[in-house]
Amino acid sequence: MGEEHGTAGGSPADATAEAVRSGDEAVFGELAARHRHELRVHCYRMLGSFTDAEDMVQETLLRAWRARESFEGRSTFRAWLYRIATNACLDALSGPARARELVAADAAESPGRPAAADVAWLQPYPDDLLDLAAPDEGAPDAAVIARETVELAFLAAIQHLPPRQRAVLILRDVAGWPVAETAEALEMSVASVKSALQRARATLRERLPRRRADWAAATRPSRDELDLLERYVTASRNADLPALAALLREDVLQAMPPAALVYAGRAAVLDMWRPVLEGEERWGEWHCVPLAVNRQPAVANYVRRPGETSYTAVNIDVLCAEDGLITEITTFGPEVLPLFGLPFSIQSAVIES
Image 1 (tube, one colour):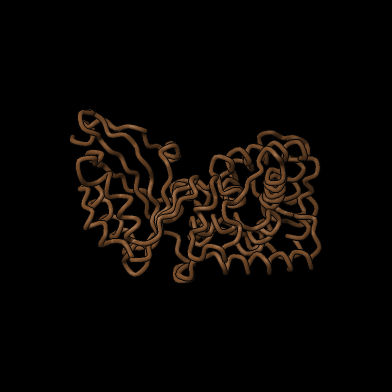
Image 2 (cartoon, rainbow, N blue to C red):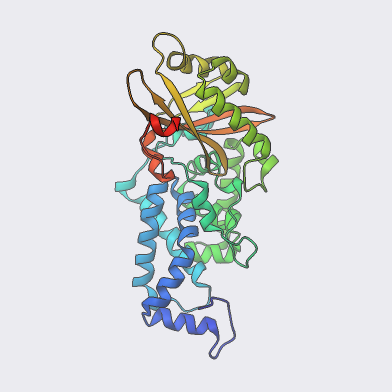
């Protein structure tokens, strides 16, 4: 059943609204399924966690079903769900069960520190699931998942915003909502929305890398980035530290959420890698699986230790690059592998076959 606006008196929009209000489970389910994936992306931007976003989509649809009689059809079902989802996320962020503290609240105290290092709950988002949220980017009202709105630097940076500022920024600058509609959804005045957006943008200017403007319209890693990823994978598989060093910019940063650790500079990163790749204490043979994460190049790393018959997952590295060199690495633990359909271990025979 369509969701377009129509004129009064038996229009498709009126029929949809009436079916939802009357509790037609088939119509409600069809509409909810149509928007489930983009709602998850929206909640992910609000919360920074993939698993929390999945939980919040369930909460949103439950709230929507309970409040179905309030759907008047003045807006689209999609906009109505976005409003419910945004407020559900705000409720979650204000609740004591989900209280979160940033490790370093003041960027001025640690200039150059990646925002991801301070967000312990940050999780990656697989690109193939992002694609489900935007199956037809040319359609009216389609969700275009641009890289600038889901890359890890942006996701981590907006977690530093107060929740209501974050909601305003996402609805206005990402979802493209008019100021009046945003104010109504958040029960704020138009003046308050404008003020919150101004403050949010100022904070992001301090935290987002300057290079971000160079690929604001991109929706996929570039060919150069994919070539760089291929070289990174080859060097990692070969435990070739000099080759890896050649791929890193001198001021490269590596962050490892949920730990608040940051390795700043090529020398520091290589010193951290060296014991596991070289010498008597090296971990073993490496296997790497290229990935696409948050519209960025990434790789899942596995190692087979001496005497073992399988490769065990170690981590996922998500890369940022500029001018052919890696400028930032965000490393996640193996617990996120199920998001990508990857196992925690791979038998050697599978890799060697």
